[in-house]
Amino acid sequence: MPAQRSHPVNPRGSQPLEILKTHIATLLDDSDLGDRETEIIFCRSVDPLELLDHFFQTTDHIWIGSGQLQLNLQKYGPQLALRSPYLLYAILSFSASHIAYIRPATSQYTLTATSYYSMSLEAYSTTLRSDFEDTNVDALFACCTLLNLIAFNSTAAVRPDPDAPSRNDKLDLDIPGLLSMRGFQILQRDPRLESKFDQCIWGALFKDCMASERAHKDAHLQSPKAFHAMNQLERLCQTSNSLGQYDLALESLRVLMQRGIGHNTIGILFRFTQGIEDNFLRLLENKDSKALLLLYYWYSMAANVKQWWASDSAEFWRLKLLSFLDKHAEPSAKALLDFPPDMIVE
Image (cartoon, rainbow, N blue to C red):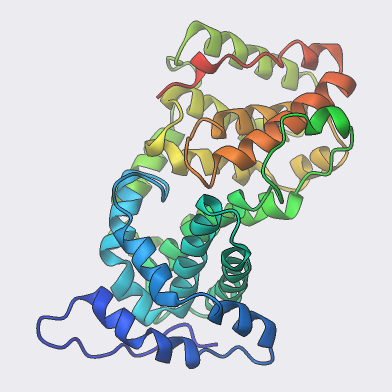
């Protein structure tokens, strides 16, 4: 599938969203879907114009990550999507996912969201394997961000049931889902893109994220409870941290506690997934108490984002991890399961 396509000429006075809506049928019909007839059927079960209107005209509250992220996506998204099919699919998937969330009785939106997500991921992956010569970096990061949010929302297959942990003692972590949220950090570290950061519309967000990541270990935390909990976490993990396998997770949690959780710290929230590399991944798979405790803290913070794509999934995994750790963790880890909400107010 081509990473880019020529975009329609902008008639006098026409706005990018209107052009996108005019040409969306052609853009979707031209997509190289091969033999994926099932996805085509699901996509056509919902009018794409409805999904576009929902995405670009729902402006009365923050529901697409941070305020600046939502502003940029709703302002520049139509023009970027005209040139980049992977972003168009991501926008349609995200919009369908949100409608499915607010209208849970309508199954066609969930199926449509899943189909567009698969299409976006395939086209996006193809683009990442290219030489980036003609790739629009703004569209690339926009798509990556939406895919991250969709992946977070999808890490719980069903909405959380508060009683579920007590009925089910099994803990099957969604490792692929966690790994799929590392895209933003991977793009930031790609040397092919470094020279393009300053010119891209996401430059201010990058700089804020990078500045926050450089926070010093002894910087002021949000509350005395946060300071105590962070010190306890670090002390616990250092007892078996000869390979540094907990370091990135600990560092990202400290930064989150310094900044607090809210609409303006979404990028920092996802930095935690950067630490899910080989050593830490093996710890999670082996149900290591310390690694699971760090993941529990992360989901506890994410549950306070108070956006549709985050709250339910984060609360689902927070409860699952809490139940498992309460029954199986070593005493030193159990002692840190009390996570007071006032630690994470932005």
